[in-house]
Length: 68
Image (cartoon, rainbow, N blue to C red; front, side):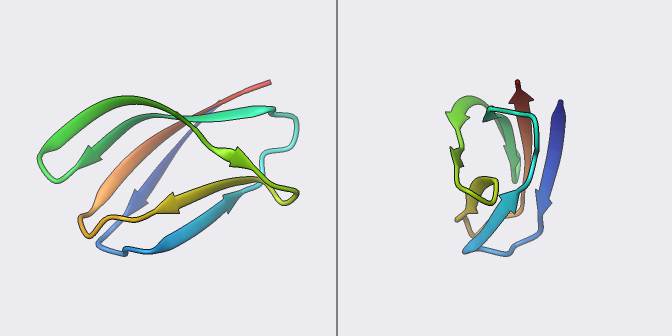
């Protein structure tokens, strides 16, 4: 499963993504301003779901990939 997360100039946000049935979640790509990045960063799982911290002053789109 995949999810796109879009943030418009909103630094300091924390998202908790509840994805029952999935054991891992990774950030697979980031588009920020005019830059595109291929990344592989795992999100930490809490009791409530996967914790995703957005901490940039620029707008960005993140592609998250979930695996069972």
